[in-house]
Image (tube, rainbow, N blue to C red; front, side):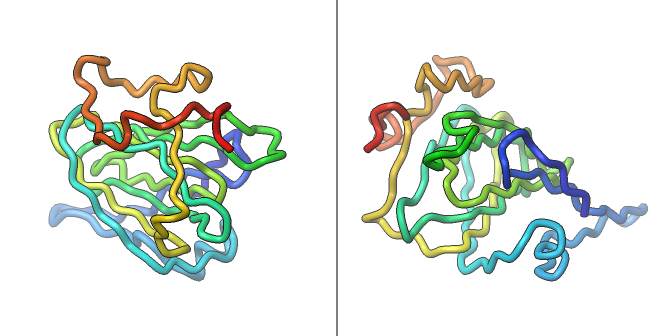
Length: 179
C-alpha cells in the first residue's frame, strides 16, 4: 500500500496495490500487519456500511471523550467527497479540513485518527460507503458540526438546492460554538 500524507497530522490517504487482468481485479482492502507498519497500531472493532443517493451529505460527525474513534473509510460503489475536520484541542491544524474523492474505481481509502469530525457528500447517482472504527459507537458521546459552517468553508461539490440532509444533520452547531 502507498500512504499519502495530508497537511493534517495522522490523516492519510491509502492507495492499495491493485492487481488486475482480463478477469477483473484483486486488492487487499486491509492488512493489520502492513497497516501497523505504515500508519501505526490501531485495532478496529466495528465495520459499518451505508448506501446513499446523489446529493446526500452525512456529517460532520464525531465521538467525544473515551468513545472517540479512528476510522478507515472507503467507497465500494459510486463516488463521494470525504471530508475530515481536525477538532483536536491544541492541534496546530485545529479547525482545518481536508477532502479527498473516494470512488469505487480509484479504491482509495482515507484514515482518520481520533479527534476528527467526519462527513461525506455523494457525487454519484448512488454510493456504497464502508468504514472501520477502532471504538464502538456510543449515542451519549456523539457530537457534530454544521456541514455548512462558514468558518470551515467546505466545498461539498453539491449545489445547495440539491443537498439532502437528515433532520438531525440540519441543526448542528458551528465549530466555534462547540463546548
